[in-house]
Amino acid sequence: MSVRLHAPGPRRLPGPVRSTESVPTAPGAPPAPLAPLASLLAFGAGLAVVAGRNPEQPGHYPICPFHAMTGLWCPGCGSLRAMHALAHGDLGTALHRNVLLVASVPVLAYGWFHWLRNSLDGHHARPAPRVFSSLVVVAALLGFGVLRNLPGFGFLAP
Image 1: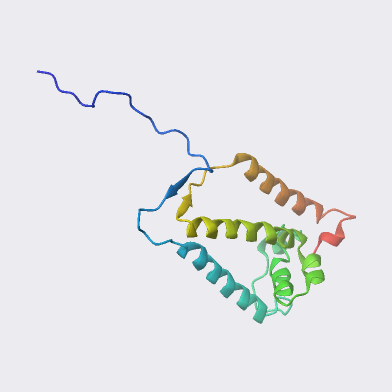
Image 2: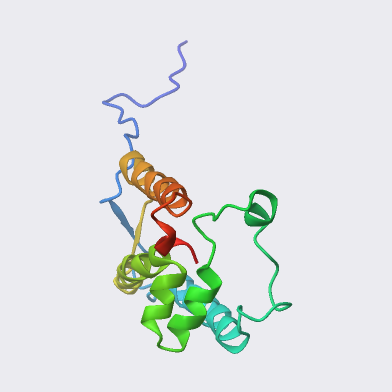
């Protein structure tokens, strides 16, 4: 007597997940834009706090630990002040405080709208690691952090 553990026929092994693949929701299920809308609500609440409390005034926010320990500007230094300026429509001050943050706003907004559109269509993108994109982001952060601390690039300091 023999026991078969698997049904005969070709077996398909799962392949690598690609970022272009999407998984539809169950038939008849309502669109689920809950996560993008919740993230927008959280972002709006944070922006309201930063808009209402000026980071230029001492005592409202903690100081940057990297700057406090080293005296150097990290890539994020000036981000709260830049967001405060953006919330009040002052693009020039925002660019002076942290140009990298201001440059990332349209990219992040595009990503959020893409996420919302996919959620409304009932497709949820499967995230896949993108090594090149991650390296570009890390290189931009490190490069910006180094440049804003070099002589001659003082205009990048907050």
